[in-house]
Length: 336
Image 1: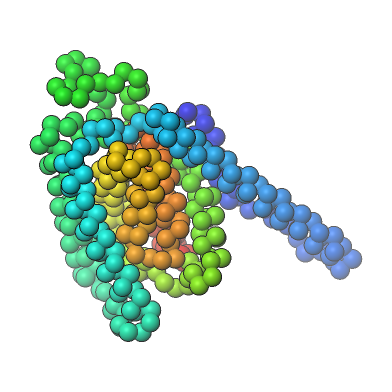
Image 2: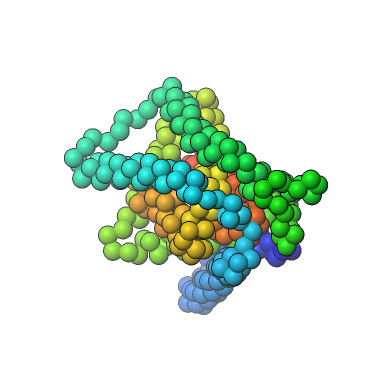
């Protein structure tokens, strides 16, 4: 498995290497240069298509394993009490999503003025308020799991099960290998997030072809991107980077992959669970142009969790994905 992930980690790095055409030539061989350039374009498009197909096969393999009951997410430990808490969380998220899209549509139609550009103090304050709110969202499910004496670290694949003495209620499943160590989880996350990028780019390209769908580079920034671009001081930019690379991956992965998905998985099955979890994750960002690639990203994160059994892997994938986008924004590349 490690060797396979390492191979997939190399493919996107090769894909982004530029294919240059020969320098300018005279008019006598201009036609030949055009033909050569077209051939290079055709070959590069074929290579990228094959690359995307290989990456899709990797994640499809993870899906087939999960659908066949060989996934490593411990969904059987989540019962009716967790389902009740999940219903409350989903209701809160849906209300926030509806309000966010309603506000965005009102601004796009000119019925509501756009939000003012915040200063550095407003940005730091918004990050702190968001952190406190997310901390409260996480504490509720964690307290519920602790009260039910569910081993949290073992359930999320953050620690190996104790062999002696066995857990008092849940026991040990000898058929499942222990979760990966921290170093292995990081290498798996690197390979899997690189393998996900061709799928994200393909989803973004397909979304742009839908009639009436805003393109990704239309100037409609997600709220987090808008705040990052407005962060001019060191304090506000540091707060945004910490929120994007550290806080968001930890909180969102615990809520969506660690808590909500196992419940969806148990009561609705693998396919419906992945769809509901990914759709909710994508809609939560309240950014219509990014809906398709965020949905695909959520599917990849969920399948990575199923394949490895460790929440560390999707957390690290999410952190690497956000860090790459932060780097693009810092370098002034639009669309991050």
